[in-house]
Image (cartoon, rainbow, N blue to C red; front, top):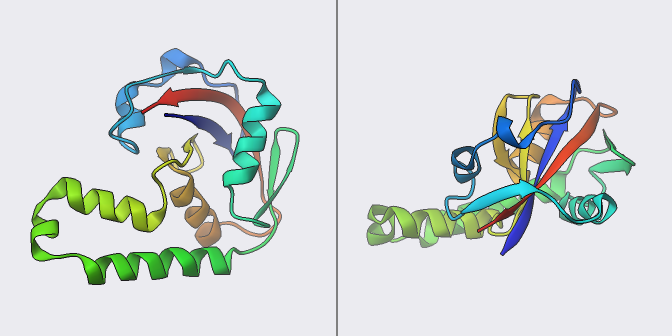
Length: 155
């Protein structure tokens, strides 16, 4: 399966180059990833994919600019409740089995097919869900971000 890696910056300096990133960094978020490269899709198609994956109403996108519009309360509540249910359903054997534990957590977070973000905002590679939660915790409504390079990755 394929997904995307988006460079999203609050203070944009330059478009990231492929040689500045590594498969190991991709695997920090999706350990099944086997390769990545600059996306060969039309950029607007990749941006529409991002629009679809972002929490509804949290951001407004104009071209390569994302503006944080509203605190995503229902989105956060949904994630919280899913994790709570996952924790309650986790057996002792599941807990001992790292792969099973990670699979259940990913299912609870609904990160199985999520895009990955590379950002210097907090200097990390992370899931789209993780980034949205970070924005909700740290940013003020109206803060803007720029979308730079878009990579395709396979897992």
